[in-house]
Amino acid sequence: MIQPSPRLAAIKPSPIRAITDGTPPGAIALGLGEPTWDLPEAARKALLRDPGPCPYVPHAGLPALRKGVAAFHGAAEEEVLITAGSQGALFSLFQAWVAPGSAVLVPDPGFVAYPALAGLAGARAVPYPLSPERFRLDPEAFLKVLEATPDARAVVLNTPSNPTGGGGSLEALRRVAEACEARGLLLISDEVYRDLHFGTRPPSLRDVTAKGVVVSSVSKGWGAPGLRVGWALGDPAWLLPARTVHGYAVTGTATPAQWAALALLEDSARILAEARTAIRERWEALAAALRAELGLTFDAPDGTFYHFMPLPPSAWADPLAFALRLRDEAKVVMIPGLAFGEGGRRHVRISFAATPEQLGEGVRRLAPYWK
Ligand SMILES: Cc1ncc(COP(=O)(O)O)c(C=O)c1O
Image (cartoon, rainbow, N blue to C red; front, side, top):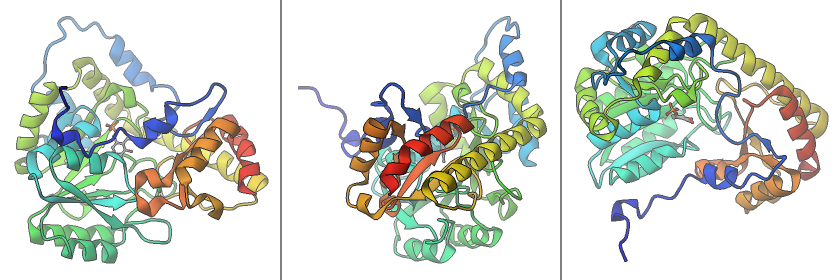
C-alpha cells in the first residue's frame, strides 16, 4: 500500500483540532484562537472593490502592502516578505534555513505549529522552559538549553505567548538576541499578539536588533485570520531563500486579501485600539465570572486573548481526558495545556475571544468540575 512520506512519520494532526472537531451541539467554544468580532470595515470595503483583472503579485508581495508593513514596523520595504499568514512565513523560514538533522529551539509551553514545522524540515524541536511565574521569556532558562544544543540552527520566541499570554522584557529579548547572533542562528520572533496587550505595548525583537526576523499577520490584532495575510520582517539575507520556498509553495497569498490587509494596516491606530477594547471587555467578563463562580482571582495576561489557568490537581494525570469530559459533559471546549508541551500539563488554555455572555455561561458550566 502506498504510504505517506517518512517526513510525516513524527507529525500528528494538531491536538487543538482533535478537541475542537468533536465539539457537541450547544457547546461554548473557548478553544480556537481567533477573534469573534466582525472584520473591520476598512477590509470589507477593500474586498468589494472592482478588481478589474485579479493578477498575480510579485513573490515578495503587493508592493503597496510591503510598504505599508514596512511603515508600520519602521523598517525598509526590502525587509518585508508578504506570506500566507505568519504560518506561511514560519514554514518558509524553517524550510529555507533549518537543515535536516539539526535542532530548533521552541518555547514549552508553546504554539503547536513550531515542533511540527521543525519536523517537516527534518529537524527536531528542542523545548526551552518559560519562567515558572506567569510563563514569560526567561533568558537564564533559555540560555541553558541553547548551550546544551550545539546543533541548533534556529530559535523561535513568541511574546506575548500562545498559550500563556506571558511576555518578554526588553532585557530578556536583548540577552537572547545577543546569544543567537554570537552563534549565527536564525532568531525568529513571532509577534502576532504584540498589539493585543493590557498595559504598555510589549517590546519587539526589532527594539534590540534588526538582525533577527519578526513574523506577524493581520490574523489577531486586526481581526482577520481568514484573509491569510502575514509577513516576515528582517534582514533581506534571511528572507530571500524563504521567498523562494513561499513562491513555490503558494505563489503568493490572494491578491484581494493583500488589498484588504493594506486597508487594515492603513487604519491600524483605530482598529488595534478597538481590538484592545474588545479583549479588555472580554477579560473583565471572564475574570469576574471566575471570581464569582470558582472563587479564583487572576491578573490579566501581558497580552493575547488567552488565559492559561491552573487545572485542579485531580486533572494533572490525564489532562486530555479531563478536557474531553468538559467538552462532552459540561459542554465547554478548552484546550489542555499539555497540547502545547509538557510545561503546560497543569494548565488549560481558555480563549477569551468569545463574547462576554459566552464566557460567563462557560465558567458557570465549569464550576462543578473545579470543586
Ligand atoms: C503564536 C502564533 N503564531 C502564528 C499563528 C499563525 O497565525 P496566522 O498564520 O493566521 O498568522 C498563530 C495562530 O494561532 C499563533 O497563535
